[in-house]
Length: 110
Image (cartoon, one colour):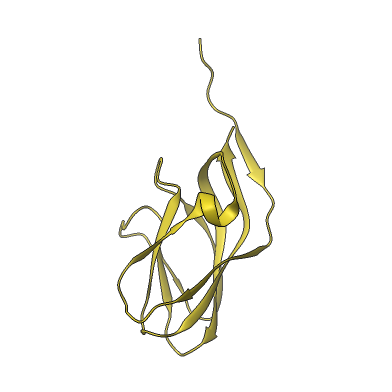
C-alpha cells in the first residue's frame, strides 16, 4: 500500500524572475527552472514588486482560472500551482513595465 505524499515547506528568499514584456499577453514562468527544484511544486509564497511604471501585474496561479492575484507595487500571496504544471502564468497591465517576481518559500511533495 502506498501512502500519501508528504508536503514540505522550503524556505526561499529571492528574486525568481525579472518581468519585462513589450505586450500585455499572458506569459508563463517555469517554476522548477526558476527555483532549481526537482520535486513537484504545489504552492508558493509569491510577490510582485514594481520597479518602474504605473500599471500592475496579474498572476494566474492555476493556469488561467478566474481566481487571480494582482500586484500593485508590492503584494504577497500564497499561490496554488496547477497540478503537474510546475508553472505560473502572469500578464502586465501596461506593456514595457518592469516587475521583479520574488518567492519567499514554496511547498513541494516529497
